[in-house]
Amino acid sequence: MEYKKLGLGLGIFSIGLGLLEIAAPGRLARWLGVDNKTAKKVVALFGAREILAGAMLLRGPGVSTNMWNRVIGDGVDLAALGLAFTRSNRKAAVAGALGFVAGAAALDAWTARRLDAETGRTFPADALAA
View: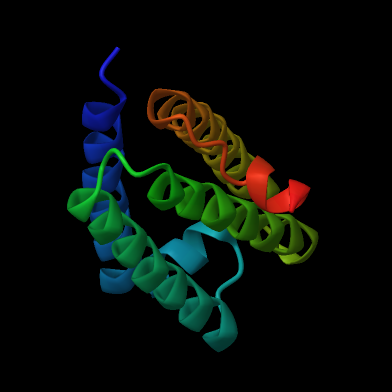
């Protein structure tokens, strides 16, 4: 499999998702059942982060650290959705979003590990060993 192409595709996906989050934070917050000013700001900020992660992948789709950046973002998204679940009046919608992000996180982590193997780098394992 060509992991650089997968990284490129995930970068394009990130940019699209980020644009959606910036364009319609209120609709997304309402869909998740957390329709308040803070939730709308958080969704828009997450959109900006998503666009930046996507841009880094477009710039370097074969660079595993760019993919690990998405994995870290997925972790932040999962934590925020976990908090939203406790406050939402649309728990099924949040549960669906949690499942979607968990699947994306698994794909991102798998791709990052494969890119590590291709380049001979083991980020972040080397950072932890140092």
